[in-house]
Picture 1 (cartoon, rainbow, N blue to C red):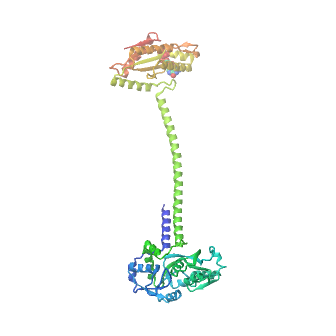
Picture 2 (cartoon, protein in one colour):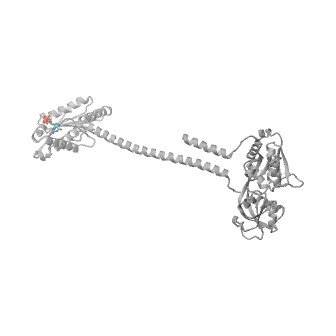
Picture 3 (cartoon, protein in one colour):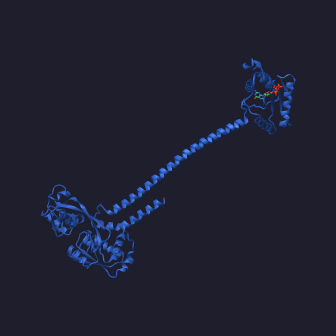
Length: 478
Ligand SMILES: Nc1nc2c(ncn2[C@@H]2O[C@H](COP(=O)(O)OP(=O)(O)OP(=O)(O)O)[C@@H](O)[C@H]2O)c(=O)[nH]1
């Protein structure tokens, strides 16, 4: 994250460096200029128009006057007859600033340029009788004319195109109107201005040159504060005011290639790419972490499920007799305690049966321990069959079982015990030569004054009496 922030800072630093916005206050700057700024002007419609008997006007003049007023500056306008005269005067420092387009190496020796104020597109102007559109590669075969002062002229001469050098854009247009030349290369604002002003109605625009130029203010480079002043004045001129001036003078800003846009685009794209890369990386990392977490949670859930299963198993084993599956002695005593407390709290009566298999030792001795185990399992199952689902049974000794009969009174409990006895008596075991097994049972019903010991003791006593009286019987003690 820290690395990313540093990169972003560098991007914004570069963006500002390219934009080169020198946000200096216009008023304090003007105070540093000891004398009015001398601005050289020459006829350059529709940017600068110099009528014989009126003050100069045009887009640039309006803009300069706006700056003058807005920044409380003093401008002196010095007029020149031609562009070349004006340029020479500026180089000789007779004027401080001029309105200029091309940043040639020669000009950069004398001037510093502000950012572009407006971008102007060149067009091909032809006579009305010209058929078709003019393309850049058709210039070689045509009679082309351009103002000698213009960059178009220099550019075409450099490319080896034979081009007539007119004294001005006005003359170039007139040459086409008079059919002395075929194609004039003039920028759109000038062309439309002269076509209107001179009422030339036999020429037309027949194509767009690939070249455009930026118009800026060039200030003498031995007064750096001057450039800063104009730069600041341009930045502080509201876009809306500049737009309304452009509209007034029939200017259209052409969508032309600008390095500023490229720089900004690079910076913005680079920043967005960095952000996207960062987000994608973060996303991948998060996804990995989520996957790991899911995997970990699945393992954890499995482990928890295993623990729970083991716990359930342990609980089951802790309360169950492993041979018969009945409640073991400990669990049975817990159940008995809770029945007793229910009886004392809610007066819910219950009966207790105690059962002991008769002469079980002899079964073990005669048929083996495994046969004895089978008898225990069979007796247990037979007891369960004789009981209701909510009766509570447990194996409380080696061959001894007990049953709690919730809600059952003594008489009914006796019948249940009798049914159990009969069921056991009717069991037959193949591995014991169909020998019958019998059991003795003792039955009692809980009483108000009972605790666990007294209850168990009474039931045991009943069981003991069954044994004493010959086994295979049920004895009831109230
Ligand atoms: N096979 C088997 N025998 C058991 C188990 N638990 C206890 N025994 C045996 O059960 C027998 C109980 O014998 P005794 O207490 O003498 O009573 P009995 O032979 O049933 O005689 P009475 O109760 O008087 O009818 C003992 O020999 C124990 O070893 C068991 O889980 N499996």
